[in-house]
Amino acid sequence: MKSPARLRMLTITGCLFALTLLAGCFETNQEFTLNPDGSGKVVHESTFQNVSFSLKTETPEQQLKKAAAEVIQKSKGVDAWRDVSFKLLDDGRIFFKGTAYFKDLAALEFPNQTMLEFDWAKAADGTGTLTLRNKKSGEKDTGKAANKPVDWSKLSPVDRAKKIKEERAKFQQMKPMMAGILGAMKHEVVLHLPGRPGESTAFTKDPSGALSLQFDGAKLLSAMEALMNDDAWLAQNAGSLGGQETPAMDERMSTLMFGAKGPVRATVKGLAGAAFDYDAEVAAAREDFAAVQSQLNAGPVTATAAPAQGGELKSLKVMGVRLVREADESREIQPFGNGPSYTLSLLAELPGSVMALTDECALDKAVADDGSDLLPESDFKRRISFPKLSADKAAVLIEVELKLPGAGVKGIREVSGHLQYKVAGPTKELDLGFSKLAAGAKAKELSAGIESLKAGGDGDKAQTMELKLEIEPDVLKELYLVTGKTKTELKQRGYGGGNGTYTFTYESETGFPAKGHLVAEIYDQQQTFDAPFKLENITLLGERME
Image (tube, rainbow, N blue to C red; front, side):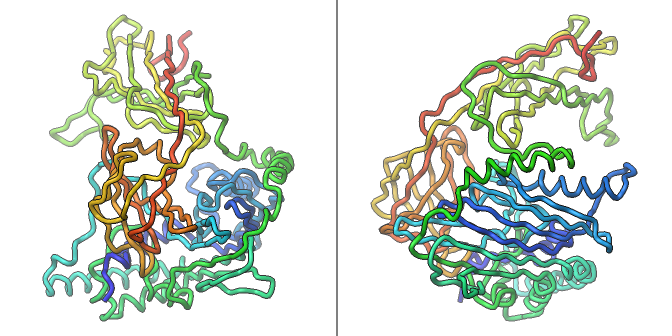
């Protein structure tokens, strides 16, 4: 019998509701051309229903341009676009087509238009492996409490039967709504891989060696219903129901969806040279796309800016203000969910791209136009928590909470503080030095220790490891499992800790052999810089005072 933890199916009704909200209706076709290093290009073609929550009155032409621009703006991991076209179809849906260039296949995402996403791993022996991955299921663990799924192993047989009955009832209630959305959801991919085709699971291979895979939303709904009505399957898998966004693929689900047990993967041998000159085509694509960007008013495709080398902030401005004059907690009357407070949201343009901001960012001075001190009394409130870096890593959005201004205050004479940020240099690889990969094993490098090693993950042989390291999460770029001449990038499933020591959760689809090695890729020669900031003579709304 398989361990429930190894199957990791989620609550059926919950996942389908999230899936319908996140994905919507689309028909997408993609043709990938991949280089050995994981870079490549994809012809992305999608027909979708435009959903707009804007209260503005817009013409069909305006809606079309806006929808096309959103495809470009929301795509992740894309360095450039080329040959972009779009049109409004007779049935009211939107058709979009374009060629997207990506540096890393694993970082590529087209939100709300795809259900098939892939990872690529290149090994030292000249082979490569393409793997279908599950959709990402949330942010890394930040130590905050979260709603945990029910531990079915602790339920009595009567309670388990009751819970299963409830899940089935919820599924039937939601099925009509989901059928209308999932029935129109289709995604097909064709992949040209850089080498001779090897073994593959679930993919269809054409005479040229190209691989294809299809996702059908109606088939997904049918598969879910079959599993929900299978008493034997539920009895075996009830303990693993809980907490992701989209369905993980156990053997039954993979078989129903793709006709094979899974995991869905393909290998290639004798990796050849690059299929095309990535840098040259990206440069040409950026030039060609300038006209389309202007037409759509979409702005440039976001890419990481050049690294900062110290220096002052380029600019600082107020992006938003939250002012709460009164609240009555006893009657649960709290505007914006806050008590009396005054907060400024500031956008700081950094000297270049950075790796992260440190915990040393803080507010130093805040004075109202009448001379009163608005600086919070506690050090905790003076600290700038949860700074949000922009997509290009060259700007940061921060929030500073001040004392509530007096009734006669019309503006702020000065608000100032300092930001501290880290800039990474090149990376280096470091063998952690485990003599054996086993629970309780210790290693010298980074004071590494394996806290646990157990079955679980995507695939029959998958294992999950909890690895304790003395390193800041932002310094650790990747972790690899090396067995013989094969080097595989591991999937990180989150982390927790503090004060320089963190426990990371990693998954290996093929398990962690005792004689394997763990190699960390870390940022080397990390530098830390301080940048002061100051705003003077602004109104309470953040505007410049006359």
